[in-house]
Length: 226
Image (tube, helix red, strand yellow):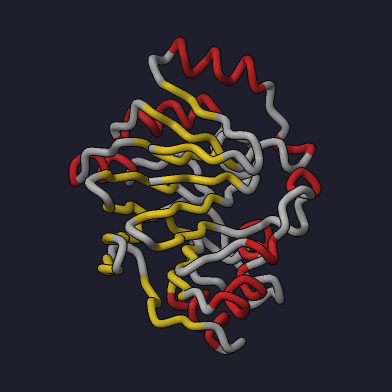
């Protein structure tokens, strides 16, 4: 599968012919100014929670591409009322089978509201099984013992974890989280976008290396194959 990073917590996965976009916050992000949002194609929009820095471009991309919203029920309903396709309202513990694989919604410890201030349900993460691989997209979260359930149920190939601190886990808790979910490879997210989540990338990578983890920090616009 190919993975393209669009900054903050936004990733496009190309899986089994489907384009799966997580948490699109691109056009308001000055670090992603070189990305032309109007050219991003998506078949599915997986939204971890309702905060603007995770859904800012969801409406525009969804309207243009016809992508299906996959999110907690309150968020799916909110976008559905705006005319987007929202046939996959979910809640914690639920799993859906999609053309590219399965998606299970798992717990996250974070707040959630929608851009107009309306109730956004609760924050979530996703475990995706596709192309013979299994990965965990944590969304915004603190370290929580619920993560241990993931290792009990799945064998992860990699995990996408927030590392910017302040609003989410920092690298120290993210490394513990990686142990708890059973991931030796971490793709970092939710860092450097705002002053409060700026990190020292080299020092962060060194911490991960000392913990026996591979930490991947992608450049915005970079595509890798996993």
